[in-house]
Length: 436
Ligand SMILES: Cc1ncc(COP(=O)(O)O)c(C=O)c1O
Image (cartoon, rainbow, N blue to C red; front, side, top):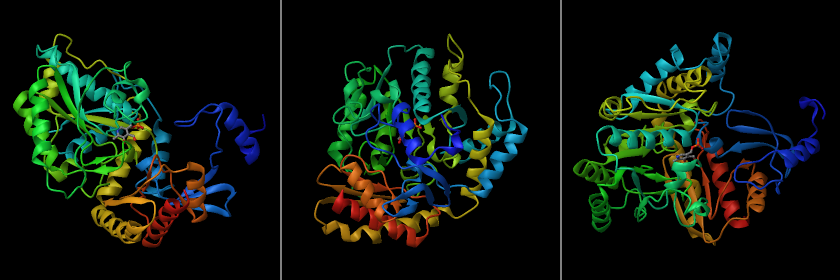
């Protein structure tokens, strides 16, 4: 095999097809991915031109994580500085400043009452940890029968086993595993519309399910305000208040999965802020490191931690090898400094206005069923499934990187995306709706 740096694009693609699994892909791969040589600001640079383009404006923030864009000098410096000190040490019996600073910072900015932080290595793992915390809590306080989870339909919480069990059971990508997965309790999907007045019948449905199943429920787990990979749908924060009340009334823990919504994406630092409620357990990931390195966190209240720590097995039995990775923690800390030192809310509002403007025309376009925007999230829902290859070509011709799924063409651009680039992303989304 040639030296890595000397691979031509055809060589690289041939080896990729032969050896490399891609997300949600077959083996060997069927569609050639685009080869990225470097990335800077909001632009991805391709190794060779595609549809006449070598630079693409990134509409995806690398699956919603690169909120500050790529190759950011402050994040680069944090990574370099930490690399010179140590890239990793185990976290059992040892601790270090990057992880301690990050945990303290997360506790400070999270909704009031979330004080303890478990650092995990990916969003899915942080959800596994959240579930384990809740089950272990009930076991520790003498209610071991409370092992089931409740969620609402249309959700997505990751690809490992427990998270898959609370993903949408019908029509979602994990439907294949029904029967093998633990059988969880599903409420109907929340009625759509961030601004729609909460539906009393739906609120009653949520309350009734929690009340009826409280004896077996360890926790209710939901994505607050935005259901992301399950369908890019927004709902009223009012339903989160209803869940909080019902869980409190019937002794069930509440988990918010803020992996997609955390760190400003919806216009509030955490989506829980729209509802003014604190969950018992909260997961964050994705934008935590500004999209540089994989790290997530599970936060919980002192009541949850005390319950676990007073149990028959008074420890949380989880400890990944790369827990608290200093490189990732340093970059996460720098990323949070960067976010909080600027008026991120103004930038998200500006992008929201740009997306509303740029997608307004699409409302009447043929093939478009719905247009919705919330914070720095813009969605076109089509009346047909996209043809991924045609959709990619259409976006690339406009000089934009998008990755639609099912009937959804959406963008979640980095917060540093300028107005012209937001307009360009919207043009590409409209082109995908026409041609994809
Ligand atoms: C709401 C939500 N939860 C969990 C996950 C899983 O995170 P990861 O891909 O880091 O495992 C995702 C990823 O898209 C997500 O959007």
